[in-house]
Amino acid sequence: MWVHSSFQNAGFTTPKFIKLIAKTASCYYDTLIINILPNLPLNITAKGDTSVCPINNGVPVSVSASGGISPYVLHWNDGDTNLQRIVHPLASALYQVTLIDKCNLAVKDSVLITVFSKINLLVNANPSIICKGQSAVLNVSGANSYIWTSNIPDPSLQLQNNIYNPTVIPQQTTLYYVSATDINGCKAKDSISISVLPSLNPAIIANPNPVSIFDPTVHFIDASTGSVSWFWNTGDGFTSNQQDFFHTYSGSVSGNYTVTLVVSNMNGCTDSCKVEVVVFPDLKLYIPNAFTPDIPNLNNVFKAYGEGIAWFEMLIYNRWGELLFTSHDIEFGWNGKFLNEEAAPGVYVYSINYKDITGKKFNRTGSLTLVR
Image (cartoon, rainbow, N blue to C red; front, top):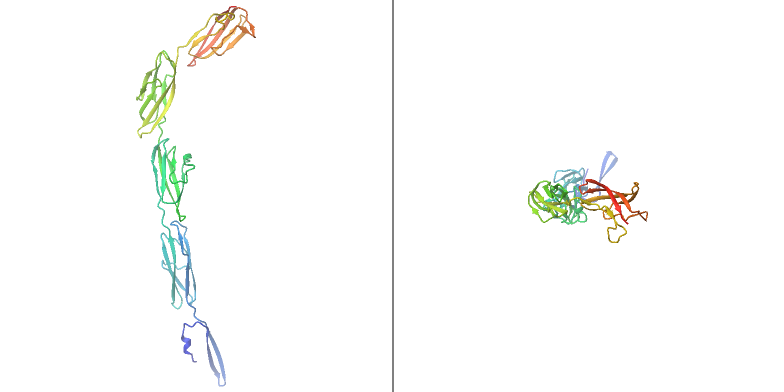
């Protein structure tokens, strides 16, 4: 067999063949033709170059190979040997891959995964500890857009939950969450708590209340929770810094007095409350025994006169017990008529029921004379 030297060149790129002629007998020959295909260049392509956020679900990368002599051996610079894989870079990384064929020819390629910088949120509240009813300003920086929420519904957060510095008025200790997005579309979350100090629950005990003008002394007691300082105004010009004290109103002036108490606790929180103290006059009732409806400007109406009366009822009957007149207003009296007719002169009977400001009931009965 004779082989042309050019067939020993492994780098040829067009098909070749070898023709073998062998003598099989004295006058016979046989022919064998061997086709030799060209050896194509070994090639590798790595895919998956991209940019991602620091927090991601993984990035797919892959490799395609051609040419050379199979089988191939493939390995990445991190030891992986798969043609397709998911990578999870924590920072920008170059994934290099090498492909080796049966003839130990090697080619390389790479995939660049760029990881955007992590969002560094700065979140604070000013102040972070408040008294109930006070406000605080939330503040966040480090991204481009923000959404605020809270673990307890806070109406004050509405209409400003997408700004970086909302002003809030939590009614109890509340945790505020912020979701942020940067210019690359990457997201981050953080939270800040605002502590609301317990309420003082201001309350006043005034004992007794109401009081009579003849004994107008009231014992005032602070019934708040955790109070350490006090400022009282009893409504008549008197003030006090005591937690409890006795105060006597003027014995000659009846009326309603608005008492105000301002309290503070050890944290500097303040609150206030009010109560109305009633000083009622002496209960008096005068009932005349006669009236003259026909004489001008002279006792023309039968009515009672009184002080300190909170509820009033007057009933007038004739001698046979027939009800002629009823009034629930002490200023509204009987004009001496019944069914629009003038009542006859003579003696009539009244029954008056009334209550003082404390609710105590009284009754007076007697007779009156109608003079014409």
